[in-house]
Length: 272
View (cartoon, rainbow, N blue to C red):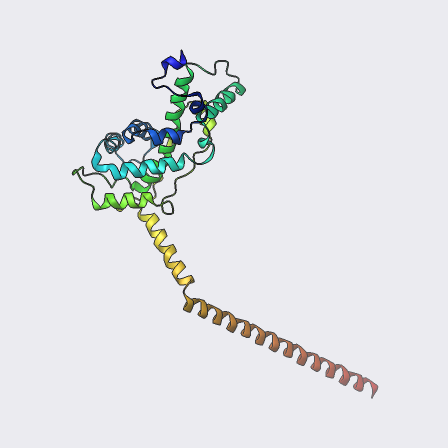
């Protein structure tokens, strides 16, 4: 009955070895739209963000072909975050680990519904977990909120900058999905606070500032003239230390001579 209830035929080998990244690679991008809405529902936004507007706006970006470049980068980052750690295990193995954890927790009914229902639920949950981490990074300091607002049937310059920054794995780092088995087993509603230090007026402004600062520091540190100057300063400091040590040794020697003469004078005085 499980097999008959499956919407598409699937081989046993595929069933046992398939990872969530395999599913994402075979899925059309618009199918991620529902997972995006679920992921948004798990975010706790600051008061300045209109949550209802975001719930309407963001899924539309996966419906319109104008934003294919944005859709592609989200899929790319999703595949990346789902390729790291326990979440990259075969889906069947993850389901087994989830059932095992529930059994160890004392639950008697650990597998309600069909296996394929669990299979689909696990895929949806893992994809949503990945999108939560991506959205947390994108919404930090309202980076994402200031882009893709016009819907002028074309991407603006800010939109292109956002996409270019989001493509960079060095600039935008997405946190690894943690506690996969526990989160699947608990089936509780999670809320993740969106980081908010300031309201940005430019996409990823703080990250770009740090990147530019690092490039500047690297250029200064690796500049041959700076390196030569640094070596000269070190040599001068070494010479200064040597002179100070020598002067100190001479002072100690002079003080010792004075003490010796004083002792000799005292001895002569007492002899007389």
